[in-house]
Length: 223
Ligand code: GLN
Image (tube, rainbow, N blue to C red; front, top):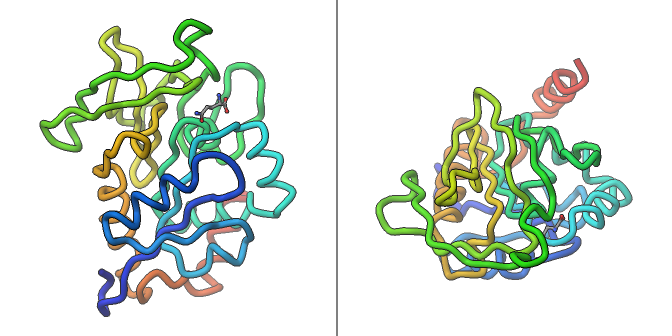
């Protein structure tokens, strides 16, 4: 709930991929979900989920539908974001197979489809200390792997062999796996908590900040 008792609204980028599953998890935990297809859908949300899917298709549609700068602006304002699988790729500063970054908000390098043919899809039980003691059942589907983690980025989870599969920098979280496909709600709860904190301080419940602040954020982005 926001300061005046209104529910927090979280957007789910709904242009391709596994967005319906995220919308369902948000509903299950009592958070209002907004399917984001157009820039105006971002109005009034306090957090954003970038789902799994095909990052090449998503990057194309993000630009065709004019979503790139508005989403960057929202991140600059401090709105929390959560990317799963292809969503992690979209949030990465570097994609090692040469694709240009889309929202370079996480100082990590990712390699797409990093597990090879035999392991296109697999499941694993992961320790994610930030979510508590109970392990996370992680579903990996043609998943990326994090090959480099910048100094400001926290590692949230690793495979047994040490490879990094979940990271966080401040309000930006990304997982190489799909918690939304495994009945796991704790990442979404964490996002909702951060979204409530973002919505509250003097900005009403999730309304976008004043246009002057948005202009300042856009300028910072350009500098
Ligand atoms: N292989 C996809 C990509 O590179 C990601 C797969 C997924 O999101 N499940 O974009």
